[in-house]
Structure formats: C-alpha cells, structure tokens
Length: 504
Image: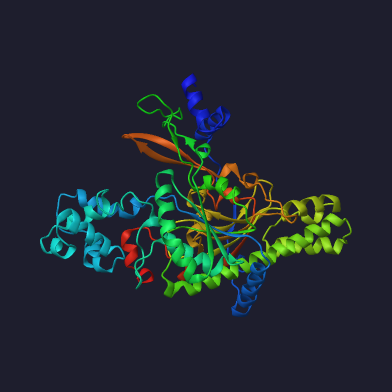
C-alpha cells in the first residue's frame, strides 16, 4: 500500500487492517452454509388461522397504544436503471419499430402507465408532438428517449422511489408516497408515523424535495404527523475491488477502487435508528389503495406475533435475573426457544444448570425479527431455511442461492423444492428487555458475505458483498417465519411489471 492508498482508505473511514482482511477474503472465499432443511409450514413457518390473526392484530393495537416508538425503514437507494434495461436496448437497437415481445407490450399498453401524462408533456416539449402523433409517425424511439434521458423524465437515472407507479383520481403516486400511506395505516402510534428512507448521495436532495411536496397531503388525509428522515450508505461500508488474481484493482489514475458493499451495509443505518419496533420493506413492493387491505392486515399480524414473542422472552430473562427458578421453568424456556423461536441445540439436555442458564440468556437476549414469507412462484431470490450456526445450534435463516453449495445434490434439492420465498417483509425488535438498544453489528455473521464478478472500463474485477441485510447481517437474531399471502408481494423489476393488474 502506498502513502496515497493509505490516505484514500483513511478518508473513507476504513482501516488498513479491514482492507487487508477483505483482500484475504478474495483469496479464501466464503464457506457455504450447512443446511438442515428448507423451512416449511409446521417446520419453521407459522400459518395463523383467522381467529389467531385477529388476536395478533389486537396485540399489535395494544402495543401501539402503549406509546412505543415505531419506525418504517425503507431501503430506497437503488437507481431504476435496471427497470429500463430493455428500453435502453431498444433506443440503441438497429431497428426503429417495437420488435421484441417486451417492446410491443410496452407500446401497446402505453396509455396504462401512471407516468403517461408526464411523458406526453415531455414529448410535446422536446419533440413538439404528443405520444399519439409520434406513434402514428413510427417515431417510437423518441418516446423511449423522452422517458429515459436527462432532458426528458430522466427515468433511466432516477431512484425507483420517485417514479410514477400508480394512477389515482387526484393524480399519480410514487412508491415513496405509497410507503407514507402504508406507514399511516399500520405503523403509526400516538398520531405520528416515523418513516426512514435510505437513499443514495446523488438522490438525497431530490428525495427530500419530493417528500416535502407530498407529505402534507397524506398527513391531512390520514390524520397523522409524519416524521421523515433519511440516511445514506456509509463510505466506511464500501469494500475494495480486486483483480482476478486477488490484487487490488486500480483505476486508470492508479487509485484504489472501492464499491458499495451491497444492502448488508444498511445494518449500520438500521443501527442508528432509535425505535422499539422497525418495519422493513423494499421500496418497489407497493400496491394501490384498492389492494392494500391484505398488506395492512398481515403487517399487523406479523407485528403482533413479534411483540407477543418478545414479551415472553423478556419475562423469561427477568426470571433468570432473579436466580429464583426451578428446573421445570428452565425446561419451559428450552421449549419456548425450540418451538416458538426454532432455536435448536441437540445437546441442551446434557448441560449443567449453570451452563444452561448462560446458554438460555445468550439466545433470548438478542434482536428479534418476524419475516413474512410467500409461497414460491419461481421469483429469483432467497428462501427460508433451517441452518447450522457457527456454535453448532440450528436456527432459521433467509438464504440466497450464492450461499448454497451447488455441488451438494441434497442441498440443491432443498433449494429448488423449497415451498416458500423471502419477499423482504420484516418486523424487527431492536431493544433489549431493559430498554437498551442492541448494537446490531455484533449480531452479523461475517463469514456469510459473497464475491461476485463485475467489470469496469472493460476490465474484469471481483466485488465483495457484505453479509446481506436480511441474510448474514441478521444471522444471530431470533427469527420467526410467517406465511403471508402472495397478494402482499408485488415487486417491480421491469417497467412492464407496472402493467400487471396489481399495479393498475
């Protein structure tokens, strides 16, 4: 490392040791996880019936009335460029008329997009013609350009949270606005709704401006006061890039290249949030008001499950603090950990009481999350599993395919035949039984990062991703999975997903 390198590293708030460790990780790679089973209903996944759901909703209502602080945490830093990959390709294509199925679907249904009116205005401004005329003239590319380019709607560069997703009589709404509405409906208490967006540095001012323009309208409509805050991914969570031979990748000017460490970096942002309960949901998974009932009901259900389980864990911790417990009570706590929190240790019965109490306290006194999972419909992404931890215990985890040994036929069978999928629908409790905030980085499993192949300026490079926010970054949390209906999972990965009935 040169003097210049060390200055560059220090400026990001990273230590030289961290960089050396990351370069070592490129050489050694990350171990695959040892799996016990894919989680399923009756084996790690709860499926509460209508009566139970009502009870959990009541538990959540009671909790909200007790004056606790609730925050809705929305990772919103992703740019929408991937949403428009096909349309960028069309603009650069050697043909002028819609040719692929994707292009045809887009132009055949252009009237249905919530951004159609705004796009039409841009076309009139830049081309002197509206969308209808441009289509009649066969000038499809002008329409696509006006949607993507900086002098048009700039959708190719904006964050997803600020695109127009849904039509309403009083005007179209962005995902950011839909999240404000959701916060008012299930995450408000004492007449206040706290919403936190993590956004990229490039978009933070625009986000603040758009929030300032729209928050008042929804505050009035839902009778709540919004407290809206923002944070950026910290430069200290960036990771060094490496060449294929694991040496540091350098830009043309000789400086080291650092890349964002993936959504796992947000564990630091989450750690800065002062709240008793935090809801986490991706920015693009929203639906119009007419379909929000299921979302609201099940958010309250999983939150009710969280606060009930947390209360029981707190009561057991207080009992252990007294030192006045019977062996039967210790066995009751073991059963709670095993049956309700799916935290399993095969030799637990062999522990002496003193060691048993240490073990029980350690497993009870940690952050807790309840994750909604949906039936698997072939969407790419992680799934719920029973997995072995570093200490030999088994617990519930959300795994990505990159964490599974593809050469292990038994594991691949578990992964491909898994019944459920993770839609990133989490409710988290991040304070202990004495009201102190947990230090969340203490509960990350650093061995669960992964390495991906990328390129820059036509040169191949290796990128290091930190343990994912809902994967290894929450590895040492108490985790519970609850089946939620597929209607609560409506992500928008491409612009044409906005044509699905759920977004119309």
